[in-house]
Length: 368
Image (tube, rainbow, N blue to C red; front, top):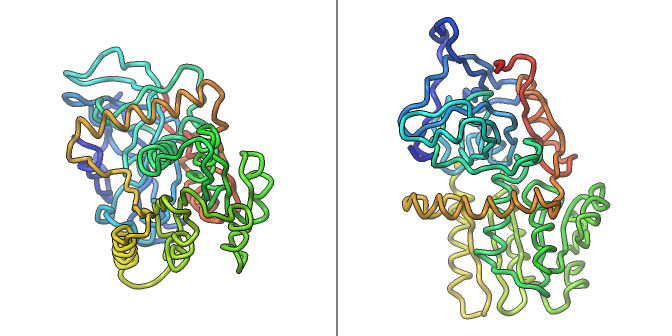
């Protein structure tokens, strides 16, 4: 079954007791719109992998902006409450079902799950697992699953940035942003990165020119570094500032929007800000102004499952290969035990970290 088609099991007041020796999973349940302290830990029996499936012992799962939106009930196509969050993971295959490659057992793999990764054990379609190079730390690899696929595809498949280009990366200290900066630099591009001044040294160390995202004259500060405009803007903020992002493009430039962080805490219909953003980008893309505007969706094309999986495997494989070769510096903001998920979410939402907060197995995780 495809990742987006796998509903997380709903929590029950009294999960059935596991048979002696049967595998169990410790997982985090998002019961509704709650504060981080409202996340629920539960243990449940883990089914054996079925045909084409693999059992995975999770070694690292990320805390992404998507889960921040889901916690507020504002992610565009999240499942109904309750469900187990977790957009991506890295782990080791412990068993496979009929029809899955037995050589997977013992292999470290990565998976894009959309939901369900905040657990210490899970069962996934074997076809969705991407090998992680030997010797790579699982938490470091985890920072580059959804972030790496997103950054690689926006840079190379959407904006098609070439050597010598100048690009603007909003949130250059974040999980996707810090990966974008590094990949753009590897592609030979010059990078301007917006961030809070407390993160400017970190952004500079990644190879970007830092600019204060709070500056009222932000557009002028960017133009000071790129008088003729930039060749691409990567914008996860949305909101009114998206107009400035489009206006900063040079002729032939591309705006890639991939989020609506500016409206994360806005009350009202959670779909409206996204739909308005879609409409605005579509209108701009139709104008005869030699500039393009796109909304990036990592799940685009998923109905053609074989092609989607092949593209995802290839792109994540390239990113993980760069990590193994030392070409990318993984940005692990913190490693937090799964049982302390509330702390991990609070830290990820604090705006005080560079990189990605990663959940790792703790003392309450299943052994073996």
